[in-house]
Image (cartoon, rainbow, N blue to C red; front, side, top):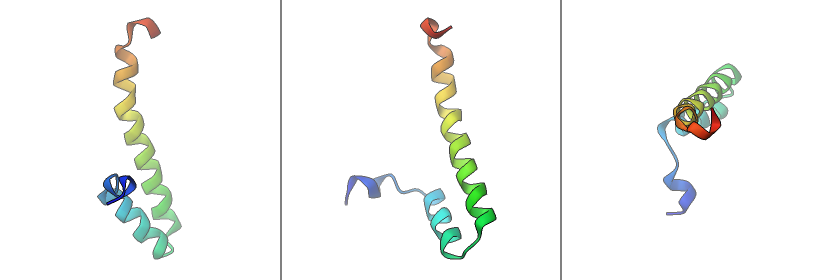
Length: 53
């Protein structure tokens, strides 16, 4: 398998399915959720960096 396929998640599957079924509202919601979850994983790391405070 290629490196990209290893990063494929259930949320990616749902996003692809929403695109294929022409559901723009669901596509938007899934993208927003993915972005927010990404930030939720990054923010604690940034906040713990004392040199950034």
